[in-house]
Length: 221
Image (cartoon, rainbow, N blue to C red; front, side, top):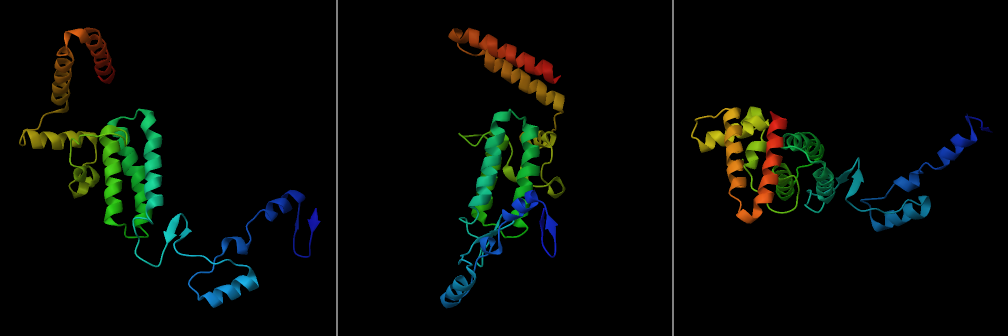
């Protein structure tokens, strides 16, 4: 046991305390003249620092946030999406992750800064690619405009997968809305016709694909 006039602690606690960073380790001198910085460094041992500095994961800067300052945000979002690409997520699952996880990360930053338009555009592109393709690699075809998907339902956007289909039907069939069963039946017929239209030398492949498709339909019904 180690004792002093003010406190006592065990050797294990003393060892833990000894590993805590000191004030000099976590303090930087910023925004002063070179003479003042040199004087503080020589007297207290506190090194000089430069903007931007990081606080609670956010870059603190005296100027407007640039796209370079947003690299940690973009890297974090890209890392999250890449970690999800191998999990075979459904469309609904990807939509939930975008609205909760990616939305939470972006809101944390935008609560402190005004994000550059270029940064917002890059985030939208990554989310759009992940939503429709499940990965950031390669090309994809968006079934619905990203603005519709990203906008909250109360503001005229889409909140569920069913509403995505609703918007698509509204646009393609001029207001003559088709039920979910009708849409699924139409998709089922289109895929069956596509598989059946494979070339004769691909009969084995067509048979395998048809069995896979039947198993998907049976499992979802």
